[in-house]
Amino acid sequence: MPHRATRPRHYAGPVVIDLHTHSTASDGTQPPGVVVAEAAAAGLDVVALTDHDTTLGWAQATDAARADGIVLVPGIEVSCSRRHQSIHLLAYLPDPEHPALAAELARARESRDTRLERMVERMAADGIPLTLAAVWAQVDEGATAGRPHIADALVAAGVVEHRDDAFARWLGNDSPYYVGHYAPDPVHAVRVVRAAGGVPVVAHPRAGNRGRGVADGLLEEMAEAGLAGVEVHHRDHDADAVRHLRDLAAVLGLLVTGSSDYHGDGKHNRLGENTTSPEVLAAIEAQATGWPVVRP
Ligand code: AMP
Ligand code: ZN
Ligand code: FE
Ligand code: FE
Image (cartoon, rainbow, N blue to C red; front, side, top):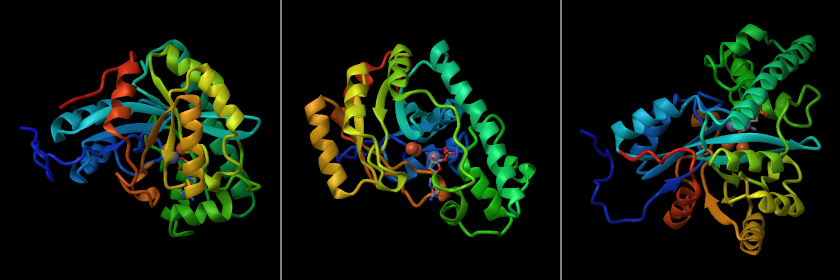
């Protein structure tokens, strides 16, 4: 029988909704079912699984949500880029088999594989103790490969203690070892997600540690193309960024979300550290036609 470990079903307190998490289907450190179980154990009522460029984790997350009595919003964090700037687009409840969406995701994943190998080759050539085999050993079968897996290989070899150290030393966007990968233009991605029945929400657009952030003009372009919302509450946003994005969302008529961007042990972000209101989740669900919310 489904049960809640921490809160009974008749609990009358606020509904806790976290709409951005990662599993081993991309660069999180826990399998999808464990992310969902942890979310239930942490007292969340709703969790979205949003692995980078893949829906690989949805099936396992769905089984876990039913078993653990938590609501699951299946999603994707779609990598986008424009003029070498990386932009992340959360896509909630899209049809994963929509041809245009599936093709964009497959193309990005394939390009990520090639780019990972080029980065590792450059690093190894410079004397950093890494092999392709050691890095691929960190990537689950079929999962989306990323820089965190290079970091994990360095942690496994005892070269650094945490992913953070590897990013600070070798893996940042300004690193000489950095290699980009194919990613769709964000305006195109918004249209593709909508075409797939999904609800597009731009992720952490003002993350101060990721360069200059997404310009207001681009957010406006994305809004005109069908963007539904902005992830305003995120640990990488300072108070100024939160104020600015909240005001901009009001002007552009966009929903405001907040999420943890949980990566298990791979990042310091904790489940439920930022949350989304039930009204906003209801609006997202009402706009979605690609895939249903999973209710236990
Ligand atoms: P990639 O998708 O391969 O370009 O790598 C970017 C990913 O690395 C993002 O999902 C981030 O969550 C993760 N990342 C970025 N900086 C750090 C860091 N300092 N420590 C751990 N993970 C990071
Ligand atoms: Zn990530
Ligand atoms: Fe992101
Ligand atoms: Fe993320």
